[in-house]
Image (cartoon, rainbow, N blue to C red):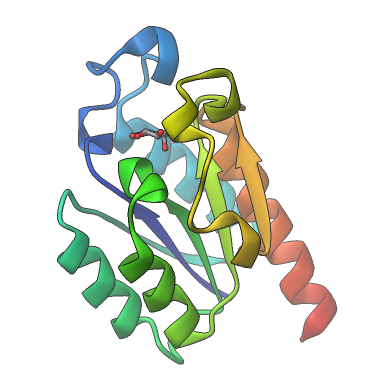
Length: 146
Ligand code: DQA
C-alpha cells in the first residue's frame, strides 16, 4: 500500500516548539520512527510538511489515484481551512486526522475541526504515537477492503 503523511504549519518546529504540549521529538525523528513501522508493514510511505496551505493542497491533488490513504495533521489549518478539507474530498482518498495534543483540553477555537466529520478516523492527544496508531489503522482497513 501507498500512504502519504502530511504535516501542516509550524510542525517543522517540533522539538523546539512548546515541548510541554507537543513533545521533545523533532518531526524528522517522528517520521524516521514511522518509516520503520511502515517498512515492517510493507507500506510505501512518503512524507510532506509545509507551512503553506497552497503547497499542501497541491500535494493532495498529486496524490489522486496514486495513494491509498492519507495521514494528516493539518495543525492550525484544522480550525480554518475549508480549502484543505475540499482538497481531501476532491481526491476521494480515505484520510486519518492526527493531533499530538488533546485539542479538546485547550482553547475553544481548537475544538472545531473542518476535517473530523469526513475523516476515516481521528486520533487526538496521543503525542507522536498517534501517527503510528493511524498507520496501523489505515493498513488494517486497506487489508480488509482490498
Ligand atoms: C495540533 C493542534 C492544533 O490546534 C495546532 O494549531 C497545531 C498542532 C496538534 O498536533 O496538536 O499546530 O494540530
